[in-house]
Length: 507
Ligand code: NAD
Image (cartoon, rainbow, N blue to C red; front, top):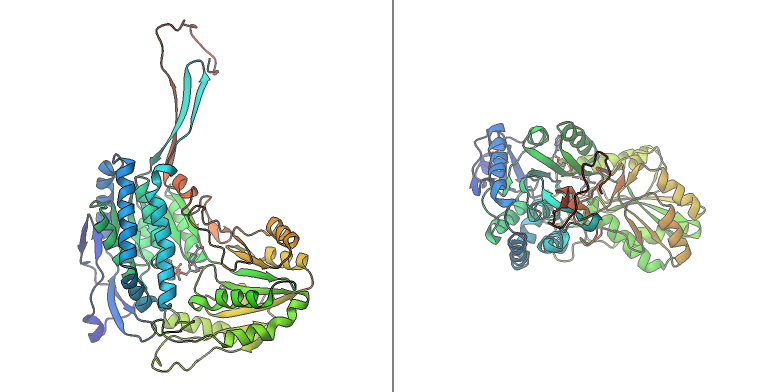
């Protein structure tokens, strides 16, 4: 936590949202929200007190009584209005996001847009929250299901997608009839708060959506709170594992989407130019700070000779502030992230990987204080090296080699993570073999970042995910609802009584 400087003390404060009112926190703990390209303090974010967190949950609990009975069409129409408001405010949202997070304006619009798609999905909730009915399962008996909201749900989000990931959560939870407490990343909460303002403007009633800020203590309070029924978490594996265990122990339904080490396999028959464009974009875009960023490329057979071409393309990327025209790679989110990434690059060199391109200390005119690391490429990367074992979350490519597709698949499957993977090839047979045998939940075929649109669910697997149901798509409707099965018989006057039935069979 940084003690507010005199300049920072003048920065605006980020508000809590409790019971429909944006309120100033009474806490004594504050953290600066800093522009990563300039170090300008943009705002101060509070670490909410236990009483404020309790008040937010209580407001959500109170609002649930009416919200759960609100007709499905009324709920859906709020999200129709919300998606329109997000579209109308896209440029402003992207500008706030770039200022506090660092990614380019175009990519910031992408961040908002991928969240907007989930809002559109929430607007279609009438088609999604349907039960099932089996007619005449016994004489005059029908069985049907209703998907009922759980109550108060909570969401905990990371810094890297401050628009998209909050929008993965509260629209689907609220559209399905729940009320919500959101805990955004303390590193970049401003665009999230602007999205929350627009949600209220769209018609979300007081108490249905609440926001608290903070870090570990706030997260632990949400995990422990007896009135919270479900928690959706997106963030690192270490924190996600903690949240999963702690909240599960408190009896909650929990889904945790966590860290990654995404591999691409490149076969020598792949279209070289398109493949290199895709690899370089997916490795260095957003400065590598995406959970679905490619961080390991396994070059198979003769494709092992493509290292120099990969490096040449990486060198063409422009490193600068996200607001500058033509920027490909913006700054890392914080000084701490910069230190961690450059420290890992140092370890890669010390542990024997070949540093083909060193992006440390790029000269960025006009932004000398920014947390920049340029595209960095290692070849000869092997398991056991820190650059391979850890999620770098920076613009660093790890190139490895394999003789055959089978060897490459075994290499990827031996890595514990399972968020995303991709193959580049022109062979349908090879792609199908990869699709069948790779043990990773999201597979791209000539698509480097296979994040599904919300008609499907985000389906990371193995060490990248805890909990069975993913965010958005159909799975999240099951996550945010309890399936109630009703078995009903309506006696009709003409029914001849069959007498007492002492068996378990339905007759
Ligand atoms: P993080 O785990 O540090 O923070 C996530 C949230 O947890 C934040 O709201 C933070 O305030 C809170 N938190 C931090 N430390 C905590 C602690 N000790 N106890 C309790 N709560 C704590 O993650 P981050 O650095 O903000 O985000 C980057 C990570 O998120 C990467 O690992 C990335 O792969 C992952 N991520 C995963 C997905 C996915 O869908 N799988 C998507 C985006 C990001």
